[in-house]
Image (tube, rainbow, N blue to C red; front, side, top):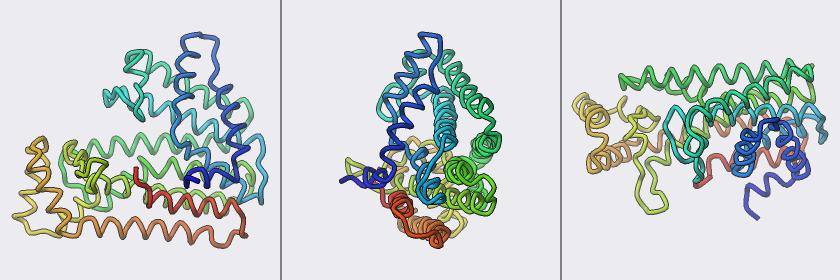
Length: 326
């Protein structure tokens, strides 16, 4: 059995029901919109976000979920999907998970409007059911994701990102959404237990940090065709292995590195040299250790919950985040 299926096993029933509810949550009277949302639903990814919501809810409650749990999972998926549709427009991207993006098939104007529609659907699903506590969690996540993206754009121009700024960027850009999933799961079933909601928010944030560092490492490790990809370097993205190397090398090496990333990022040979330099100067080991630190801290946070298949699945999920190959 694939590890993702094993993680999903204790919530298989909920995930199936969630898919039906999620489709309903996306429905519209406009035929074009329904065609597009149908396309989106049929090309879903691993569905990690709703899995986090349901596993957290069941671990916290001792195995039960309620209507709020399903709404919380639907809202987070609606709003996350909206941000992806908008991201593809911003990045001028024609593919998403190997399929054509919405903007590639229906053009930018329609893609932006579809993103707006999904956003409003998510907000209304919460408001119509008085889930204001859940809505607040999600709204904070959307605000932070936007700030993280803008912070990265602002800093990328100068290539002088410190490690602290890097952590702040990935906390906002990536970790805040997984944090929202876990706090949502807890809040849906235990709305008055502020301590547990905060603990699960922190748990999700730590997993998100580990997840992003793992993504950064993929740029330096061999892909399916046996070559490091170097895409982040081509896009002038400052990731942890590179930041650590810049902070520990000589001034001369530093100016060569910055010049390479800034002015020679399209030169395949030079990108290869940068990758080799980062590898030889301990950049990957350093990033890997940081990733493991975040993972261990996350696991520590849930150790006092009573033993359950949901807790086991969450532990598997945390380990999958750093062991995954894609």
